[in-house]
Image (tube, rainbow, N blue to C red; front, side):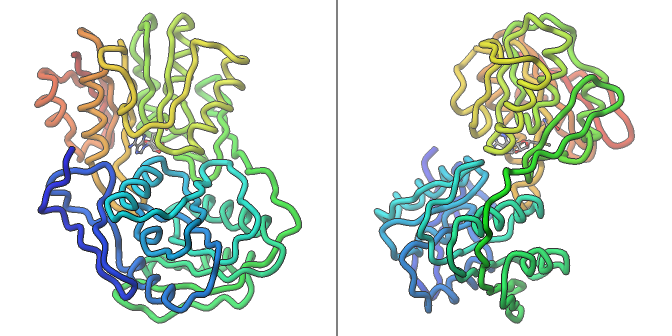
Length: 377
Ligand SMILES: C[S@@+](CC[C@H](N)C(=O)[O-])C[C@H]1O[C@@H](n2cnc3c(N)ncnc32)[C@H](O)[C@@H]1O
């Protein structure tokens, strides 16, 4: 999609002036690609003297465009962020080389500055600090920016666990910057998988840091599992799969189905791969995973059933636009007669966009909080 001129894309700070878009591009996008914490971090970046910075959780490239160094590293669990950096560097004609550190990738040696935005998940923050600390041999300066309210006592304590000289700035436009010296750590522990097993289902599910429903089965997913479509669909997709719970359970009741699990989070896909192996046995060509933005890389008319528990957050922003993109992509990817089954919070009223796209919507089940909807192509 071509960028619309009305997109709020002029990003102006003490360090310069850029065009900056959220990715994927949307006409009349009401959400900006940066926040006041990015602007505040730019003020602190003006005085830096470093050669090989690592950016952490730079959501759409607000930090990447401002880096003067020819090569930087950038750590993120989001495929959409990786696409955004590439897009925004390109439209600003910047040749900065980015080494992406996604999922479980090791941090390269030699980083001399950490520039961080706080992630939503504290387990992900802890894992990222641990990975960075294990990659350095001497203390490295760290700056972390976020909306002021996100610097809770627990988050400050986490920084104090990994850093010395932790200081937090005064509030400016509702944001703060934490500065600290990251302490070298003798060795990185392996990324901890957090397991749970629900008494109602024969699944043992592992979760890397930051992955959705890391501590228990999501209530929406529970309603979904109670009303899974009948066994027998040929090509099945678990869209926004997280730990893979919906597709895994479908695979158990429908062993002849071919299943693809899709998520934009690298750690969700790593968790899902682990869970496929643990719950469905070893390598099996019927079971595949893909990191993707919704179904952007999946072939038209290639699926018979799509199972979807869509997100309504993008990091700290509440938004339904990803769910709506999932519905549009599903319509393209489903074969004639194929089914999209969606669980969602009742108040999101997804029957409306689904009806506009597909026509008749069936309410499969509901409870006071969630509703499970089905549409056919
Ligand atoms: C509500 S969670 C559901 C997870 C899992 N299916 C369950 O029921 O527990 C939504 C998932 O969608 C993923 N997601 C968010 N944006 C996405 C996108 N653009 N494309 C694919 N997956 C996305 C999130 O990473 C998250 O794992």
